[in-house]
Image (cartoon, rainbow, N blue to C red; front, side):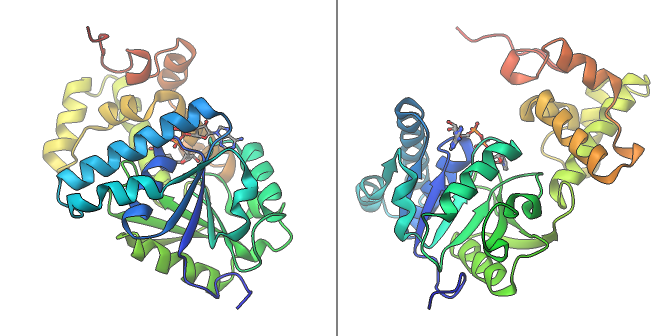
Length: 292
Ligand SMILES: NC(=O)c1ccc[n+]([C@@H]2O[C@H](COP(=O)([O-])OP(=O)(O)OC[C@H]3O[C@@H](n4cnc5c(N)ncnc54)[C@H](O)[C@@H]3O)[C@@H](O)[C@H]2O)c1
């Protein structure tokens, strides 16, 4: 029982305690898994633990588990500042910033620490699993497990099979995702997979329509909400995701496919250059005045 994927996932080592890492950790705790949560600085980790606890409280208040279990789950989380604590884990799930050099460095270091049966997974929303896996001794144990934000309430996991990912590794990742309560779809390892590619194109096309004067921002968003039952319009979504993030997704699609259909609209480029990044900067396609 030493090959990666030969053992069901009962313990999880989450790398990065930000938006996604904290959400993944919270859900895993409620499924009875042993969960380590790693970050690089104690202040980041403290914030991450607070986010996990907020998720857990919210899940309890929504009846996702009995309120009597709240204390058990919050105290089961093992925050850590050392990767060495991944020595006994069944699955590493990295949710570090979306930069290839950061992910490669982490996987290379973790490859030296994790037990032989452990899976190495990334929550990346657009980077190549195959390239990431190139730094570990056995690239067949690396897989993409792409959760959605907010993790406790989003039902999907997109599983990404890298060029070397072995079937048993993919199957173990699928079983883990089902255990996390998610519905699983698969994608090969091409830029943006299925979901990020689609949303990148949709957001870009909406910006092109605004740029070309086809319709107002309100009409573009309302058309998508009422015409397609989208919960928010593509320009509102771009503001939520962050215009810089939207631009980097498009750049990844453009360079990855070498196809001009992914060319980012000049309006998007200019807004990012001007620091109009959406909600996080207070201004994007809409304005978000500071509260208080
Ligand atoms: N936010 C989303 O909506 C979303 C959705 C799906 C997937 N993702 C993907 O999940 C990953 C994490 O995104 P996020 O939104 O949670 O980011 P985030 O910025 O909220 O969190 C990243 C965390 O990683 C930590 N970190 C920084 N450098 C590190 C390092 N060298 N080693 C370990 N941890 C480090 C940071 O301190 C931070 O806590 C990215 O790959 C992103 O593309 C994000």
